[in-house]
View 1 (cartoon, one colour):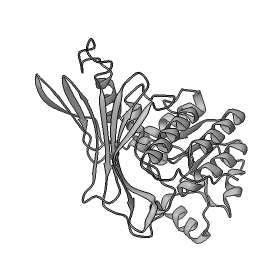
View 2 (view 1 turned 120 degrees about the horizontal axis):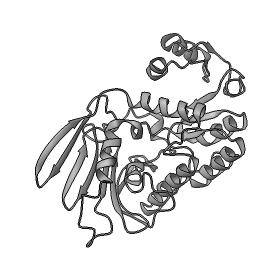
View 3 (view 1 turned 180 degrees about the vertical axis):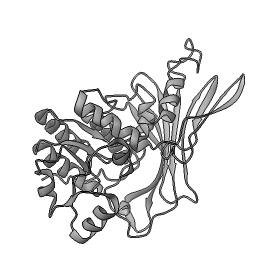
Length: 313
């Protein structure tokens, strides 16, 4: 709730299945009032923007209902359960004419922006020999959550968007090919991915890789772009307020830049507000969310895991 306070936006209302939990949250974080249901919230005329942080399987249905109520929507990732649901959300965005974005907050922080600018500078490879000298490697690894955490239910998604972003900022359209080097399901829950390593090939021949692990022995959230002439590494692109370092290494040596500890969520909210109020274009939208879910579906299929089920009735 800090970003709203930092940028001068009102937190008008909150809803939860348990009103007592909503009241406690509202009191702690300065939300003005509590409403009785999600329907009451999305139909409240005083509310301009709906933030959807519900369990992943509920993102698609409530994104659609919020859009039909005429609201701008900032949806937690993933925007929907699968590509078919994401297409349904995109259709509603077009019909509503409101602003929609999947909340990849780190894209808006100067750390990620600087890494992408370096990657796009054209100094990474001999262009006569390779189509694209950039090979992004993203990794998000953390210790296991408690056994009953909602992310262990069959409605999760992998961290694949950074690799897409580094190839076209971000690449729109479908993946050409994905190959799983390894994948593992959660013990006792065969439909839920605990970890995977994926090699990706994008249209035009560009490549990337991603490593996602929800039961690792430590927290590690790196975003690395590697080329024939060097590499650039964001040491914690998901939490740059904790570690804002970017290390660039070439034949001339290595340097480390610090890009600032201001919250990536604050940058995200500023960009979303500018899109709503001023029509400033966003780097990601409902169309991009479809591409992201198509990639996630393809990786699940390559891993031998089921594509996430539909929750939109």
